[in-house]
Length: 360
View (cartoon, helix red, strand yellow):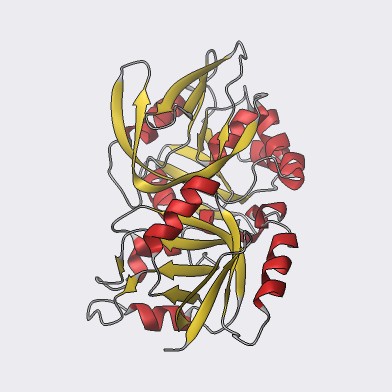
């Protein structure tokens, strides 16, 4: 296999082996600490705009199976591995998967050192370059001056383009605002209700016309305070608060917080993995959760808002609720795809809110 370069905005150049697509790719370099679940990670829409570094050294050893995908296609822009396993006899082998999905991969590098760099300095813009003839100094300069992927409206690239009805003859009807929803979230919701999946820029009047039992705001990629998201999704959420029960997940948690008057900020290196501890403040109980996000909500005193969950590692906000309305959100992924199922009860909590609502 041919050589390739990983070039970072801070001037770091790493040489490794190439697999998959021979195209060059640019993105935000982030790491995921999960030991399993690479199929779900590669296809999670929350990774749009990012080059994914897997900290677990051996990836691909149980093949890839379409039934485990979190969306219809691969969402990462590139992949960084220490030791890929290209010879799995179960499912599709990793090399073929990368080639068929046009994903560039650099491997055979010291992923531990690179992870420590990101932990110390934060996520970095970077590029996987397969053309060794290019001038490295010029590459570094180009990457440093290139706009960050979060300046793009990444949600628009992963949201559905039209309204999709998932009917199952349950007594409740939920509108799912799709900011890049994972299939495992949709699967959980369909256990309880007919789900109307709508684009991120849907207007509140259209949602009202469905007469839903409740609203779910999904996970997704990018900056929650992107101007286009503020003009569309957040404005719609503001008009829905007080009308329906609302449940926000991951990016949806951040968007709901903004709609309620809170601000967000970018984390140094984010939370990405299936082993993040969170504490429920009302009980003192700690749950292990799956997470994938690069932003968090700022602590601020707003009389109607209660902060219900915190991260046990860095004390960031992991969940909030409205004190008087059936409105709540969590930063982690209660559907746990992949990960532990500790917090799936939150879907039942939301459905109970829907049952108590006047409209359904």
